[in-house]
Amino acid sequence: MTERESAERAASMILRARDCVRRYKNHTREHGKTFMILGGLREYESRTGHPVTITEIARHSGLAVPNVGRLLKPLEEAGLLRREKQGRTVHVAITPQGDALLAEQREDFLRDVTASLSALDERERDIFLACGEKLLARLEEHLKNQSAGDIGC
Image 1: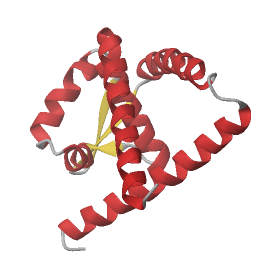
Image 2 (image 1 turned 135 degrees about the vertical axis):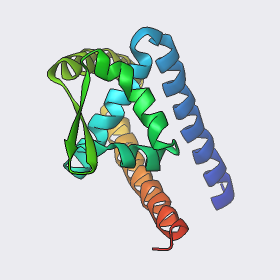
Image 3 (image 1 turned 120 degrees about the vertical axis):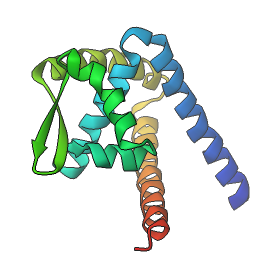
């Protein structure tokens, strides 16, 4: 298989995985959007070590700051998120109620992923995870470098 064919196959797999996540979100329609937002916020916190700001959400999502506020407002009203103002910066934090809902939804999602991974033996799972993590780290780094180039860094 040529390098180009490998790249096309990998791109197809990544897009299929994205489609599976989208369909999963639609399948869990009642809490799907909430799960995706809370999960994204939690993932950001775990990678950076601090709560995300409204401005960071806007920058990474391509949404305008007011649209981010409108997107988060229902979750805030439901008691799942809170905004913490520090000077001119507004951080978004997940509340204990939001944490509980996220944990419940995450368990449902992990149950489905576990069932899917059962198609692989232990060695195949280890290889899949190692290769997937390496590929995603490289893609994230490439996208980060592209973004830095876009703003003249």
